Image (cartoon, rainbow, N blue to C red; front, side):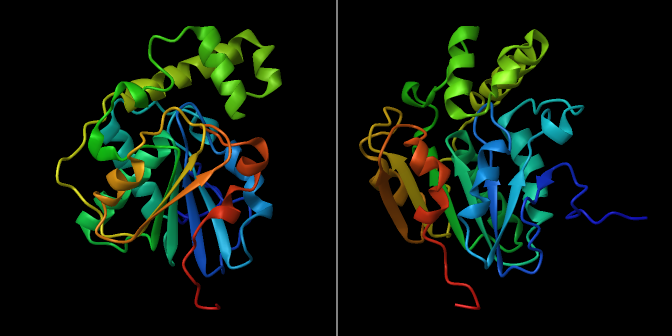
Amino acid sequence: MTVHPTSRQDPRVIRPLGRHDADRVLVCLGFCGGGTGAYRRWTDWVDDDTDLALVCYPGREGRFCEPFAGSWDELVDDTTETVLSVVDRPYVLFGHSMGGWMAYSVTTRIEHRGPTAPDRLIVSSCNAPNRGLTERDRFPRDDDTDHRLLSWMRTTGSLPEYVLGDPDLREMSLELMRADIGVRDTYRPEHGLRTGVDVQVLHGARDEVIDPGVAEQWAAVTAGRCHVDELPGGHFYTEEIWQSLPRHFRLPATVAD
């Protein structure tokens, strides 16, 4: 039996709601060292017209046996193909932190190739990509200790307690994190590149990663509209905000609306 790319058996995409008749899809891309787990709790916070599609990068979860991406461009290629496999209807692309830059790269790649671009790009806790990778954006860093990286993953919710108590799982988590840091650090901006998609930028009021000029910088890389919304908390907001983050998304109206 042939399995369609958007099948639930596809390890690249998790569909926790399975709303295959929904009017649109919210496609979520992971942050550095993370998987799809941080977004699965959002099932209670998306409206009935929206399905969730959570993208899994190589080397984790159902793609554990695949090698990690070796560079930013390699991960963009993989993620672009994954996104295109689920967009048989209008969709919004979301990314947090490193995932925000990935969402931007994927959007511009899709626009260049010609298929339907997302109705909106929502980026969270990341600076505009045209700045390139500055010291402010190296969070976490490749020279961080294992202890510091484990603490960071625990704070983000990407490291369950049972992993901390298992040396083998702990080591695999660190390997994943360092692989993602290595990929992120190969990012190089394409100067002059802009998207025509409307962009919403979310960031925490106490996030030290975010440049004070974030609004003007993101507006410079889109020919569409750009909204910037500041929320309570730091890089992952407050726990309450993160748990219900989709209620802050400026989603386009659906056909039913």
